[in-house]
Amino acid sequence: MSGSGSLGVGIGWRPEIDLTVERLPGVGFVEVIAENVRPDRLPESLRVLRARGTPVIPHGVGLGIGGAEPPDPARLAHLAACAEALESPLVSEHLAFVRAGGMEAGHLLPVPRTRAALSVVVDNVRRAQEALAVPLALENVAALFGWPEDEMTEAEFLGELVEATGVGLLIDVANLYTNQVNLGLDAVAALDGLPLSALAYVHVAGGHSHHGLWHDTHTTRVPDDVLDILSELRARVEPPGVLLEWDGDYPSDAVFETELDHIRGAMARA
Image 1 (tube, one colour):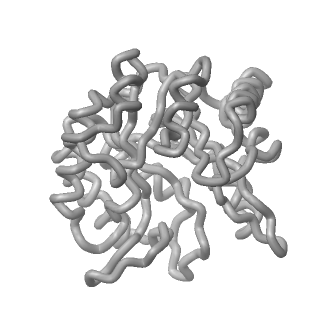
Image 2 (tube, one colour; image 1 turned 135 degrees about the vertical axis):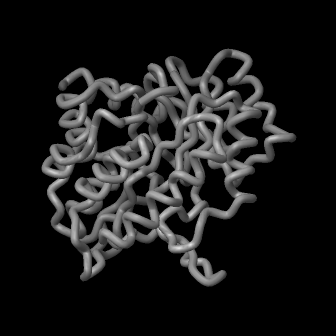
Image 3 (cartoon, helix red, strand yellow; image 1 turned 90 degrees about the vertical axis):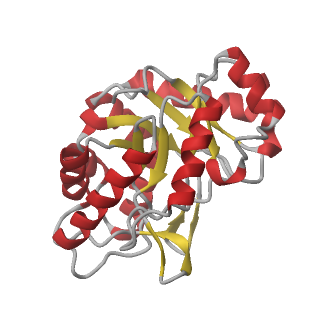
């Protein structure tokens, strides 16, 4: 994907682990939750990383590009300002439905995979691309459910969206694993259908099994099953970057270093 270059292996920057991220060896890039930073008052740690030449990607969680309403211009302006302040190579968001009629869903909900929904999402993506000076990549979500009126698989929907807009893909292999466990959607088959030529970078994360369901909590080590899907992805395409997400119960520096090594190992196995 244009604009992403070769990012390497990275980690999600969080205020709670800012010094850890600075200390970790071999971090190729970081990702910051866009809603948690002010472009005019960047955290010192992010300024340190940028001064070193470490790419920083703003990752939005609230744009709602999968909703029926056009993206909020203020949210788009914030994403654009974050990218400019951080000199980011690209911006990422979720292909998700998050609000309607002023009400917030509180979750990243799957978009109905219908022709009508695709038309709306194409328009929304084009609006977002016009507002951003750098490329946009969209992430597949861990679905809590499937819409009964779905007309396409996720791979087909994403393929047509990429063809129509040129948008990049942020493939979250942990979300593919979640959908496999919870919805019976084969992760490797999903990889075979995705337009991997549009791959911008990859997310991996850990989670927990509870009563037979997988919860993608981002609070524990990445399981072997998720790393196996990463290896399958790497066998098909060389990802520009792979990023570890961790959002709570933060471990020691040594654990983070081991997790990044596991990601490198999964890539090498392919």
